[in-house]
Image (cartoon, rainbow, N blue to C red):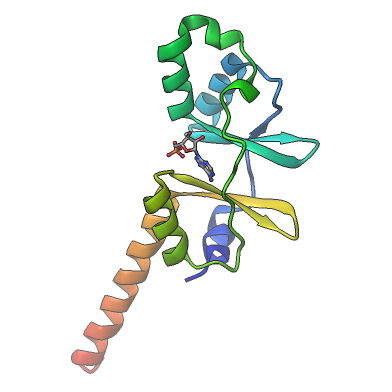
Length: 142
Ligand code: AMP
């Protein structure tokens, strides 16, 4: 199965923040959209990703003053992306190996969506269930 199939259901919306937005406003975005990571973009160019893990880690080090710091202080700048043509299996393996749960999708250099480990697990489960139903149908001659 391809990442494109997930985006067809989920859509291409990506919540993003500017690098100079404060960590407090980032928290507002995470809560408002009920998500665990946002991409950091400058004029539609992807320059980083920041997840709830980054906030927790830096909050422990810097204390509450972190809330007024810019998002660029805590983002990961070296973002791993994928394309709609990548396979769900390949990207799942990559995420497990690198220990992150979000991958932005780009197409022709532009942001085309974002997938989380939850999206990938859901899609793989559906795929397995479909295959099981097919096999059962085959075995029982349905
Ligand atoms: P997560 O598991 O997505 O909450 O992220 C764990 C750590 O990996 C955080 O430091 C994130 O900034 C970083 N991270 C998350 N997604 C990516 C990605 N696609 N590329 C690079 N780093 C990432």
